[in-house]
Amino acid sequence: MGAKGPTLHEVAERAGVSIATVSRVARGLDQISAETRTKVLTAIDDLNYHPSHFGRALVKRRHGTLGIVFPGLRGPYYSEVIHGFEVEAVAAEMSLLILGTEHLASADAQALGMADRADGIAIMGGTINDILILRLAGRGIPIVTMARAKLGDVPNTRVDNYSSTLALVTHLIHEHGYEHLEFVGGIVGAPDALERWRGFVEAHRVAGLTPPPKPLSSAFEHTSGMQAALQILDLSPRPRAIVCGNDEIASGMMSTFAALGISVPHQIAVTGWDNSPLARYTTPPLTTIAQPARVLGQQTARMLLALIEHADEVEDEIVLSTEPIIRASCGCPFDPSTGFSHANGQFNRHKEGANIDDLVLA
Image 1 (cartoon, rainbow, N blue to C red):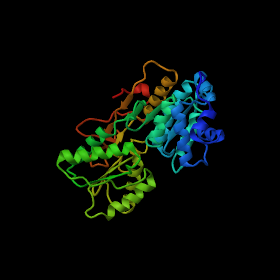
Image 2: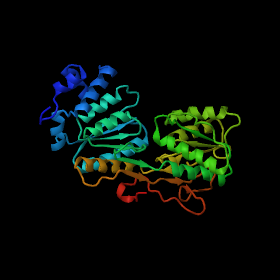
Image 3: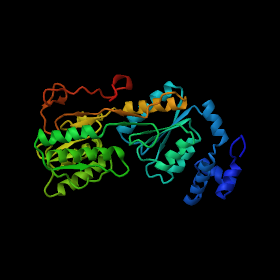
Image 4: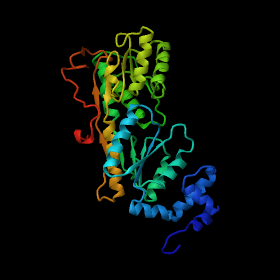
């Protein structure tokens, strides 16, 4: 291969394709069969091939761009994460490329193309195939994953989804005596939601209760929460409390209950997850779990920038703490003077919209 490393022609010869096909795969373009794409990517890995223009750009940071891959861009949670990421990118004088993969069959191919246009990439949740993430990282492309379990040696940032859900469900069981609970939210391809479900199940186990066999599947949107509410009302017996996978599901559910004359929390208690700005303004105010979404974005960007700069010390994983926010929708008393309810005399101290320098890492 020589001192200059493998060439485009050598990759094409190894894969048994044309150099044009290798170029299209390396740039993440479509209209290539999965079989052919796999052959080319395997040859690239075997030969440790790096397109020369990307190599020069990485050394010189010619792009001046960070990439971030999201499942979708709707809702307050994603906007907060992106805002935090952007704060750090702007401070580093970098622009931002955003790839939303919802309903996008060519997500992996698009991520390959982004790798050729950005100095580093942050990848959220289960948006991109694990094999492709490891392949890109193995080619020396700076990558940080976020909101998921750690993958190999790839640096990762996430929040603690398990412990706070365990604490919240324990509160519902022990403080309120609820024994029949349901979890609403999709856990397939959603690492955060899966950890919340595990916390839900563990709280039942510790309390000597039997949890439902699986969650009531729902997209993480207001309208999906409305639809899930109708499914809840069809269950026999009806659950006494609903643990929703996020605040949007919870708000949609509560609006449907209100329209049908179902009283929250007196007939059915409802809780959410995220502590989005709307949570304190629902009727009644929503018991939920606060996560530092903006800080998650900031911390991810800081870690990615450190990788790009070849910093000596880049943490393997950072886990941010979360906190139950007890309001009135779970059945706790409501204190109108503060806009919050209180439990055991402890008032909520979470600062909505906090930045990374305002919080202490777990």
